[in-house]
Image (cartoon, rainbow, N blue to C red; front, top):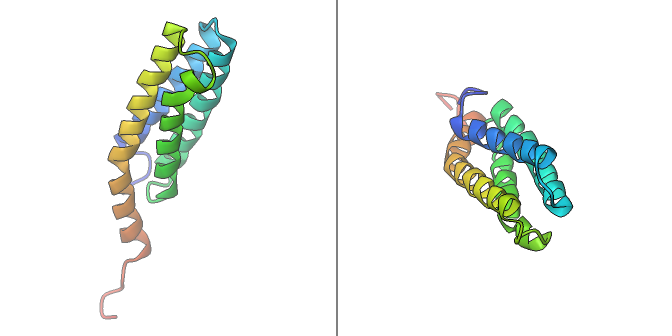
Length: 122
């Protein structure tokens, strides 16, 4: 698989940018803003690494974990009652989790093709 072409990674990158922007621009909850900023930055970094190295399977697990953390962050960091922040976290978490789960099998296939390819005649 060619680098910088998997749409699922672009979706995760976009979700991370939105999370970081929303945290910076408009949240009244300090806990919500901090959680969205940190998790958004983690999404951005993970997506960029996955875009650059689509056969790096571990990044799919990282993106799944960050998506799950984004989903539970309103309860963990105490901003579940701040409807805008919580809804943003839940929505972006679900989007990034779904994209990571969709991309995982593609990454596994790319990894197997790249790293376990047997030369012909062997």
